[in-house]
Image (cartoon, rainbow over all chains, first blue to last red):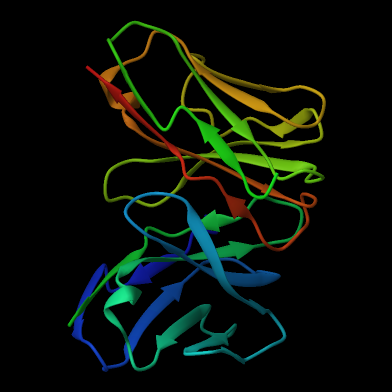
Length: 110
Length: 114
């Protein structure tokens, strides 16, 4: 299965700290994406990293991709209470639907 | 429209009843996806449409589940003879095309089968 798996399942940090979430997957991919979900509702696309990229930044987000280890990490710097949500990685292998992991539940305590 | 919309937001039904869930994708998006998310779990892929056709129905959990899309726009997911294990949030997403990189999600329909 191509499915990504996030680690840890849950993470609790203080406001201002950095949060790091990891994702592992099993097969070759074209790109890997991170999504955020608040309160069990719709997901919002955060960032995409292609298989030939190693690192990407967007605001307080930093994503890395190691295709040799089939893993990615999402770093949120200077976290805020509003960052509290579930974060999912999703992998794309071309002309097939995205495959989502089970997510990491992040709690940022003010 | 401005975003993907889904209706109803919440649905409570009795075991054995049929339910229809609706998804209205972003205008111009040809690809449409249905997912199911049980409490505290990840997204389970159900089906996707490219235009009006559904090349991949392998994710549908049973023959009680069906989906259609007409006019390349609105899609309906139907669950017949609902069971308690069907209780979940049903999420719809759309993208410009099946190979497009970003999916845009609707707010979901929370289904509770009593």
